[in-house]
Image (cartoon, rainbow, N blue to C red; front, top):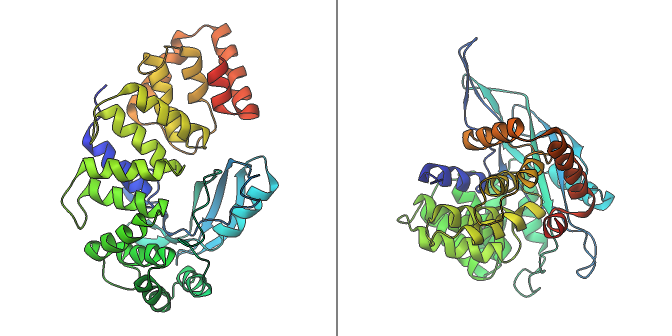
Length: 347
């Protein structure tokens, strides 16, 4: 199955902070509805010591007001760890969104998004020193005072603080209080990425993929996605698998694609699970197993099926026997209890 480039551009936008799903048309009322889109998403503080960190995904349901603030945030699906759930709740309250619109008019809405925790190696303290000024800038941005945020971020970014460089790049990328400037955003993402900031590496990769502030260069995008993926950044893990599956910027390699999909799925990526499901259904890069494919399709997900995924899911549902479906449902429960990789490795 050959994937179109448009799909990969959409994936890059998912990474940039967009939600899955574009503007939808309501045929009955002729309304144009755009869901809330996150524009500022400070990551939660990872609880636990570096040597003893739990992993998991918290699925959050948030109500967003007409100014893009989070009114309420609640857990739709627990990670299984109270410390992760609480960390996700604390972080979500500071997120900022472009509000939902109906025919261009801002209205209150809700959005369901995952917050992923994985035990990635902690960056050296010298590269990402905690700084009260950066935190003050992030707090200002969280309440919409982007001018104050810019004044906090810029001096530290010039001094070489990777966190400030990343935050300043996002200000330019999203046009938060300043005109959108992809060239300046690219410059600051590059500086932070070169210091090992995984989110900056992934954002930089996405800009190369879309040709924002720089000519399109899929090979360079793949290099930066790999750097972020090797630091266990889940979105980059998934996109790297997708690039290998489609042969975009790298040679097509189904085995390598499946490997990265497996890792991303284990780190809580529902879209990676669906892509991996198709590979098991078709036997590309992994042994063919409709039972595994069916189980992966039925893991909890806040991401709607793409047409190819919906078709594969439907074909599996009609082709499996009752016994196979029962076995697949049992696999879903095992994956929830002991982890996806453990089940796949032992099946």
